Length: 465
Image 1 (spheres, rainbow, N blue to C red):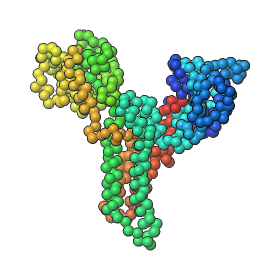
Image 2 (cartoon, helix red, strand yellow; image 1 turned 90 degrees about the vertical axis):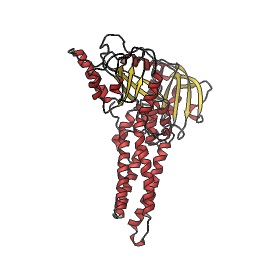
Image 3 (cartoon, helix red, strand yellow; image 1 turned 60 degrees about the horizontal axis):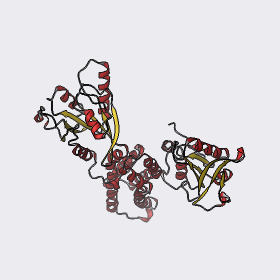
Image 4 (cartoon, rainbow, N blue to C red; image 1 turned 90 degrees about the horizontal axis):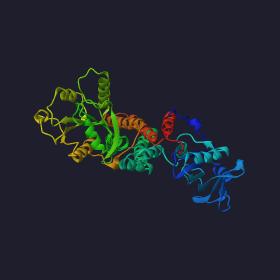
């Protein structure tokens, strides 16, 4: 999506959009926000109980009909209208929501009437933008709204809700206040040298050490939070006919990949997401590795190798009923820097593999993908391997790449502060480093943030959010 410029989010306009997914459904909602919201609705809404919708109390619900003023009061639909007055609404403006029957035609007809009466179609994320700019939410909370919509598991939803409730913002604001306390003392020494103010450098270092440890916890959570939010890219690989596609189907509990006894059946990368212990697993079946002159097979293997390079986790499959081959060991060299679970498949058949040759490759899980033997143990091993030790869900921070870079800069500045304190530098050096940390913490919650960053964030929201 192209970036929406902040100048396009004109705060003086009354905006409207369909807030529900545009499809055939039982209900649909049109959301309107701005100073003219109540006036606009009053022109197209005929309440069953004769009343002026512009004068009703906040947080009230009203039954009636949407009518077309230009077509001799033609009834469009039977609706419920909810009223939320400023500043106690999502945007801190007057907000009206029209709940109608679902379906594209009726929703678009109602939206068309709202636009005809003076509203403007909302830009992507404009309702959330107004909530942010009007001070109802900060930037971390705004991002969490997108994470709630896109959450794939309960863990991802929990983390996003924590962020929406302001727990993550409170954490960073608390850090900022603690840094500001130290900064204020150093500032006083610089501004009033004649007062000969004494400061306790040991206490400064003790407090900075505590903050440093908290920053390190955040950095440790990055990997785990990314997996919970985006999922683990897990690739099943191995030579031909080791049962990769059967394993893929068995883990998904669906017959998606084509399974035959013919070598090289899988020609393309097939992928689907499943949930393992709250972790989204984006699992991919790849073409088997074999020597070939076929252009199609070569292309299939190129795709397999590319997907292997992108993987967070590899399920490397051996065949229990066949001897190890050069292809096995050739492929093993390509995954040596990856997290790998070695899957010994087809244990329901007669053993021909020499396990002594691969005894150093761990962890190993023996399964029969066809007979569904050992799959629960494999699932537990997957969850165990991808989880970051020592990271609890209360420590998860769903941060964007640029916010992670801010955390890295804060960590660097804290280390600089220790260098200045330990090296008997002038207090001005410590003061400047602390000021930079405060500035970075303010950027995290959206204070003094570059316009381009805000544009990119809100452009990712759907229209109506």
